[in-house]
Amino acid sequence: MTRHLNCIVPPHILDRLAESSDAAVREAARQTLLTTARLRGQREVRAGLLGVSAPTNGRRSVFDCRNSTRLSNAVLVRTEQGHASSDRSVNAAFDGLGATRQFYLEVLSRNSIDDRGMRLDGYVHRGLRYNNAFWDGQEMVFGDGDGVIFTDFTGSLDVIGHELTHGVTEFTAGLEYHNQSGALNESISDCMGSLVKQWTLKQTAEQADWLIGPEVFTPGIEADALRSLKAPGEAYDNETFGKDPQPAHMDHYVDLPDTDEGDNGGVHINSGIPNHAFYLAAVAIGGYAWEVAGRIWYQSLRASTPTTDFAAFAQTTISKAAELYGVGGSQQTAVREAWEQVGVGTTVAARGGTKQAAAVIPPPREELVRQFDELTAQVNRLRSELLSS
Amino acid sequence: MKLTLAEHGGLAAALRLGQPPVVLDLSTLPDDEVRQLTDLLSAARADPAPSGSARTAPDAMSYTVTVEDGGSQEVLRRTDTTMSREFAELLDRLRRLAVKGG
Image (cartoon, chains in turn cyan, green):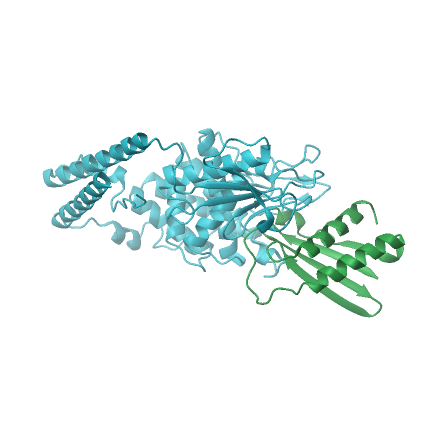
């Protein structure tokens, strides 16, 4: 059973509506909550009865490239059914893929990269002294590092979360990998990569380090990490590679050529701006960043297009904050102020003006009840399917 | 003959930005080293560059090897997802020679 329950109304809104003064709305919301809770319970019981120790969706396989650059020559070394390997890189890749998969499933209700249970393949020990890790559209590839500057890239959970999120972006907004849309693409990967780590460590926004790849450098290199969402431009400053060039504000946006040499218009440079906006929003909202800020950003990603730029994305996050948590609420205010602090313009309409107001005007009572009835019917149909499968 | 290797992009692209390329003057290398290097270059050259202008995978690196010989110049460009085994061997050899100060 891979089918999803796509609730039209988020659970926290249902909770609130279940307390409505309108008896019909209250009863409809209560019935929906009750049915979805039953469904959840049946899924858990069914999984337990089947003795499922690992989910079939997003199943992981790790391959050893044995220092070749040809992935087709790699050897399968670990699967969901197999035992842990004696190779630390294999296990770290396997665990990182699993943590990212579970984060997306449990926090964002996303079934693997494509939301359809896409298998997760990781390739370790790619090439000789290879200083990189990347997602090639189908699998994740890890280098061992040269041992001089970089070390094994499987050692960084946020890097794994970052790379797999490139896959999620491909399957959602498809943000073009150059200029502002490319920097946004990079930023989404940094934000979600950091959240995967925070969620795994159960850290609040205040407790988190907000660093990307603090583990990828050898001990001799004086650097905190590849990037910092908390302090873009301050992740490193040393003789080997100079000072971190990431800006934290639009005033310092770096115009680079849209070429390989120019990092496709500075996608790894200007990502510092939306990265910092996410950090500021998450800290202002408080608590666990994945619960509110992460949800707003993820839903905004899903609502974006290949050419979305910073301003358009900012606008979307403000709209989504209102849609999910109410117009003028503390969440929407935090998001709006975060973008303002990094100098990304938001329109008057985006500041809680008519657009947002129109978007959240509640439908008439009859329509609301009809929607609840329809949702309950959908849930009941799913329940029947589940019981008969 | 002079060989230049420039590396771009990747997860750590910001660190590579503005870094000088690796430059090797083959006239300063031992004969056997030059022979191996030119063999690797021939093998890498034999594998044609992929056609099309599709953008590389996010965070994949790109590599430019420039060969200057007399008045002629030749450029080989590959990425992590498009390189042949021979090109990978050439890259590794160039990096190792650069570390040795070749």
